[in-house]
Image (tube, rainbow, N blue to C red; front, side, top):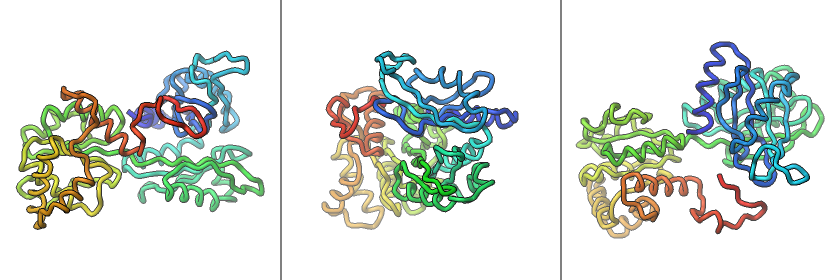
Length: 384
């Protein structure tokens, strides 16, 4: 599960009770660090916490000092996991430095509303936050769903100077899909601003309600992804069989691909795996996916490539297209068939692992190489 899936339930409970809280956010790291900028942790006054900002070495220390550090407003604090004399004060093996923005409900509340809205709508978000000067915690957000309103901190409500600069930085990060460390002129002073780009929550569409879909669903939900299960077999595609799924749909197979299901609304950043083990179902589902206005970030088909070629030939016929070798080769080049990495998988669970590993690699545009083989340009590769 993602930090937000852990944080949001506690946050809603605290908000409903009108209780104060501290939100800790990693805003920068130096050297190696288990968590990267954007990681968050929520602290309640009764000692409960959700989310993490390290591999477990900093959380207790942050919780111990967070309340008095934020007594006068938001603060950016430096936590070193290695002292100058080489000792590691918090039991970390990373040996890096982590900078945390600590803030109370007053400035964190509108941010949490924005994060929850984007999480539920599965939209990308860019958050420009001031990290120094007298207006730490002031922020602007780009990418919010239209019905969520604007995210403005209490400090900005009192002083609108620099609002355009902050908003422009947020929109730039959203357009480029990258986080940005920048500066902006606020009240005549050059001020550090960190813009946190948060990609839309990944989505996985599993076209199968068979038993081998269950470990794939389980692993994807452990990663915090939105997961939908769809199958034409109504006795298998049930909420009882897939209680952890975000959605379970019975497909009108005989109507595909002419009438695509109204509930099928994937994002371009989503992944789909076709694995019903039924030739007719797989062909009709593939035809529907190929008829989308945009290609999915990942499209995988279970089974040997010979079978996938036959499926694509049938999909072409269903789409009233010529099943030429060039067309089928082009389609094959746009998908992963067979789906998954070569991990020596034999059981349904290990097959699911190989599929999820390849999807993760594709969505993050990572190398997929062992970390010991990855050449970092500026810093050692940290285990994520």
